[in-house]
Image 1 (cartoon, rainbow, N blue to C red):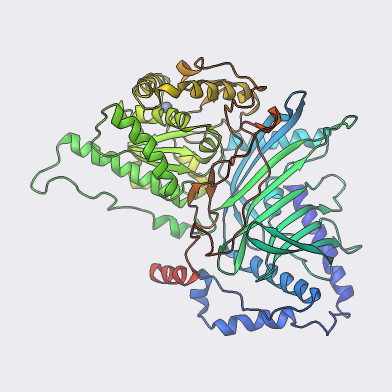
Image 2 (image 1 turned 90 degrees about the horizontal axis):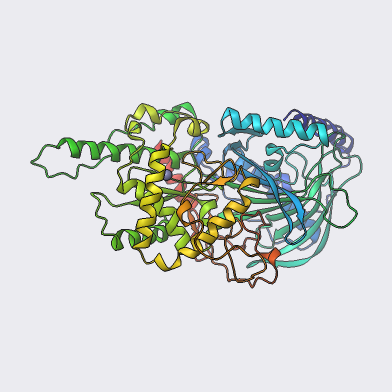
Length: 597
Ligand SMILES: [Zn+2]
């Protein structure tokens, strides 16, 4: 953190002096429209009261169609400043998952260790990160930083990854950069103009150097690919590929960043090799201020479903109490930006749970619900009758039978009455800051309940439509075991019991010998998938859905990449044109915020 702050200060100082030098020679007057004039004209055109506008999203004023590339440059510079301003009151969730790489003769670069960072980023003036992870995890982080500081003078800065959402937060302009038009190119459905961006000489440290893609209607930057340069003496900037999505009208919102370093060609001495995915979501979350926390007390979370003339029996009271706890937890995790709202993906999970229930004649007093945790680490847990599974785990599961297997463990807990978390029916226990979620909530069972749930889960599976496909589950568990020692961060759970501990898989071990031996040379044997292959999160409203990707033929063992981080290549579409309707229109957002206040 300290190094990073030093870099920023240095860059700011340099840019201020550069601006002073160039103040006299303003931009050529031949370039209409003057960006500043348009920008200042905007608020008066909108004429909305300042208070309401704080929550509503200001739509960019339609720009006159540019006739020269110079005008295009002016427009995207102006739109970038508009984006920085629009996001300045947002505090999205930022997750970075990083895998260190080592060379494997057969598989190429494979993970040798991994690291995980999760926090809320304040996109206002001072970029700040509030960490969800506990103190012990932070000390892991500082050990990591310290270790690299000594060895290579290179640091993984979680803040550094999230910083890559913009090319240049403070000085993205013609005084600090040269822009050269390269060509036109389609990214997904969106036609883009491609520009090479180079910092002007003596424009300071840490300037963006690379390429940007600008969509050709609103002239917003949709992708940045490059690095920052020059690096300070005792730090280094990583290469990044940063993608934005058109989730609200008029704006393309930073969503995914892929970073990679390392060279595995012969003769190269690796100082550093890793790949990392940074995901940003929860833009539409409320800021977790103290006032907000108080509004989260729930009094009437339970609808009374008992017959009107009857009093609740002790057992009924117990069940209602548990449902209250369950509702509280689900709502709190959603408002903290950790749980996707109920959606399409839940219906798929629900179908699998129903298949298990029906074939096992399970008849519960309340239906089992499913929800998706938005984070990457592989985990499941249940609270009351709600089964929660992480996005990362859904991503890496090779087939429906494996999904059924991980869900069956939680269903078994529910069937066996291993109910945890009834203490959360007390609403004071929901009053904590979003960053305190992992310290305040937890759903870990004792080892005896874990063993019993695994035993019951295997019974459920053997009676289910998945009974003939348990070989695939066995293969998945073998693949997980093979990588478990290197992927401790991916296997560190934050709310539920881990699938593996100290490098050994301990979930559903009765099935781990099932099926054929793991064989990388068999190209048709897919035991586990890379991360990010199945679930798509809308970074604005956190909705989760299945990725619609056509299967790609695997041509070598290196294509399998089980549990691995890969580059992002989202199919870009314009707002309102895709099959999946993105976030609510700003008019609705304005109306909601108006009635809510
Ligand atoms: Zn369990």
